[in-house]
Image 1 (cartoon, rainbow, N blue to C red):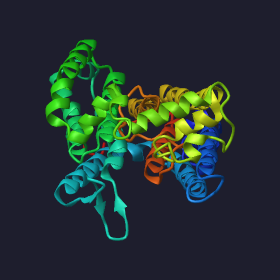
Image 2 (image 1 turned 60 degrees about the horizontal axis):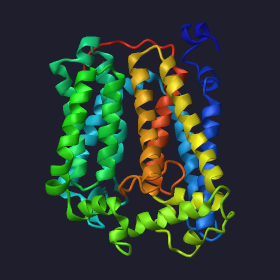
Image 3 (image 1 turned 180 degrees about the vertical axis):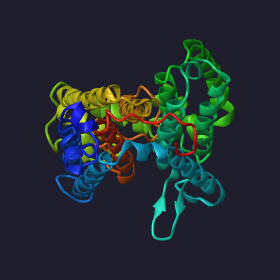
Amino acid sequence: MTASALTRPGERDRLSVKFSEIDWRFAGLLFAIAGAGSMMLYSVAGGSWEPWAANHLIRFSLCFALMIALGLVDLRVWMASAYPVYAIGLVLLICVELFGYTAMGATRWLNLGFTRIQPSEIMKIGIVLALARFYHGASAKDASFSFKLLIPAAMIGAPVLLVAHQPDLGTAMLIALTGAAVMFMAGLSWKIIFTGVAGLAAAVPPFVMFVMHDYQRKRILTFLDPESDPSGSGYHIMQSTISIGSGGPLGKGYILGSQSQLEFLPEKQTDFIFAALAEEFGFVGCFSLLLLYAAVILIALRIASLSHSHFGRLSAAGVTATFALYVLINGAMVMGMAPVVGVPMPLLSYGGTVMLTVMIGFGLVMSTRVHRYLELPSGRGFFF
């Protein structure tokens, strides 16, 4: 499809034309990762579709259809909804503080009676949309070095503090790093970047010692020396590294991973499914999966770079940054290179909430591709 066909009046709004612009290579890569996830969930369940593998495939199929539908939504609609989505997410996070549902020692959900929602997941999309909307109407000077940068800093800081207080350190870290990535891609001055990194490094020790909850602090200290508590807080890291190391170059074979089959590996269907894959398929299996993730990230960044609108570029790149951070943090976590913070491997781990968030984000990426030639207004109003 040529640029002229997509920009002619009456052509760009036809669903058939939009549908033809869907990037099916990108979609196929997502299918491959989700398929690998279902295969591993079948394995860690002892060769059974229940309770995880079948649900994983069903959820992905529904989320995939949603992604395609969202990809056909006009990019102007995404832009108009940016600030409202962020505002709704922030209000819901405040509601969690006031009357949230508590489970497993954390208050992260709102109980609606018929279901529970986790507003921090909404904020993962909301922060990308809102920052992309802000920078779409900002000048290069404002994006680089200006007192107006206090606005996006506050937009990031408010949800990060609320989510960290729940406590949910993993999600708070994702929101903060995603926001920082969008600011960097928008043209943030290197002076501010270096100052921020130095300030963050200086703040880490007092934050760990005086702000973190006891169990969070214990996770950090155990990460540095997991053998100090091998049957307690160090158990997860030790069993995960044992699983990865025992896989060797080619692995033990499908459904033959002793750590997962004998229930030594904790959270084998969620946070540590990558370790189960490493045990069964070894270095080759892990490397192959990481290649799929790398291909998704590179194609998504390519889509972002081709957008004619600043909002499209930043929103697609911001979603891609979130996805890449999921992969990076989970990979480092299961290899013992980062503390255990409860960040799953996207589309591979079992869990409907994260999958839904990721696929909604990729719906935005797909919309950016379909409407890549669309020019957007640069107004600074709430909607446009």
